[in-house]
Length: 164
Figure (cartoon, one colour):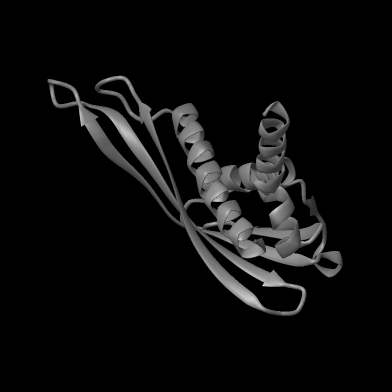
């Protein structure tokens, strides 16, 4: 009986077929990726934040090498479409104490064979502020960082599904 149970568990664990998303993305993107992030003329400071965060995510989450356009297997052009800060919670005096940052990104993916694909993603992040105050630069940066990370995670999920 133990032999059958062990065989069943071994077969079940081996057969589940878990493959990390970074490995699936490798099938779609290749090892070397050209990453270009368009700086928004309306919001250049936030675009720079997003640039740093997406480059870091590409290296750490996917493990891809960011290279120049000519030696890349694929290229990704990222554009910030919209960034909203929406009041979510008010205190009893009517002051905003919680905001939701929503970031919309557009990824234009071009494969080595010339095929292009447009992927739109959205990331959001809720954060608190003190009553009767404005959003500090640190809170704004933290919100943009988390929202862009969530939007990039959605992009990774879509790419992993394409690789499957």
